[in-house]
Amino acid sequence: DERRLGRWARRVLQPGEVRRLARSLKRLGPDGRGPLSVHDVALLDELQTLLGTPSRPRKRELDPLEQLTGLEEVTTFADRSARRRSDRAVEERAEYAHVIVDEAQDLTPMQWRMVGRRGRHATWTVVGDPAQSSWSDPEEAAGARDEALGSRPRRRFTLTVNYRNPAEVAEVAAKVLALAMPGMEPPEAVRSTGLVPRFAVAGGDLGAAVRAEARRLLAEVEGTVGVVVAMDRREEARAWLAGLGERVVALGSLEAKGLEYDATLVVSPAGIADESPAGLRVLYVALTRATQRLTVLSAERDAPDADGVPDLLRE
Image 1 (tube, rainbow, N blue to C red):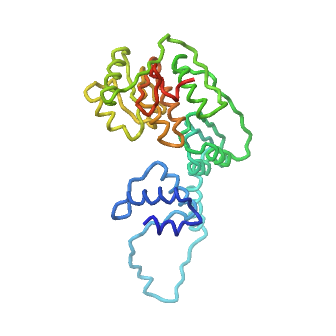
Image 2: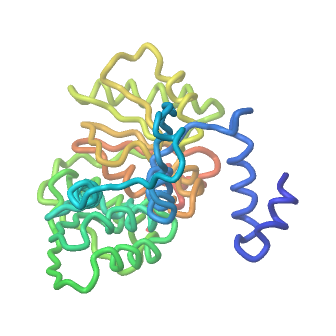
Image 3: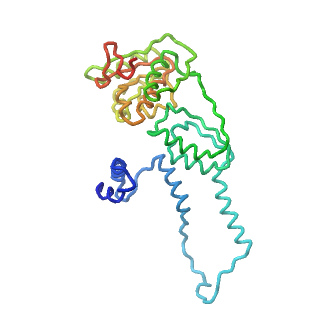
């Protein structure tokens, strides 16, 4: 009941947070359980830290001595020391001498707390690209990261070279980066293919247009083709591409991170940009998946100009 939840959480949660929590509770089954996500792992770790590890229930066995009265349990110093050593071993196993965090821009504040507990005395290597962060509030996550790292000395290195994308693709993506994170310098592409990105406009049938553009790219490259759509269109896109073979794959915008394709078809940039507070950064990631060719397919909501260039990608 969203109203009841709102009353209980009046001084703790914002109205939008109450609505999201109420929707998530509705997804639980009749037994109060539902599928866990990767974010739940950090939450469970936080709860374990606050509440402690639950004791394992053991089958009760009848002890003959329980029938006697006036007896007290006597343990030796060795017994108590052995138990303390066992408890310490569990705690020690939870920490590491060196912690490596890759794709650090995507860790949530709670995940930083979880990792930080395991590296309180460690040295760290943290690798990430703020421009590719899918977390809605990068500054909040950065604060949690700083808290996890503590006051230890730091050295920062900036990678300025783009080996994945040709200059023609990088130039298009840089326009979105300027909108997503003003002032951030994009990495410099070291190669050029002379293949100018293609801009196309879907007519009345978006599915037919996606299939046609995917066919075109399959004919132009020998390798893989990635078709990137907004998260809520993944199943539609897979249906549109059915029968085109294993070289083409449809994936949601958040699934594209870390992957690369010989050619990429980005469908409706505005649809990707509008799907979350981090949408522009997610779109930037989608545009940087291509190693050779890039096609951007606009729908009506993208407001393409006469050349098919959507509003988000114009100068």
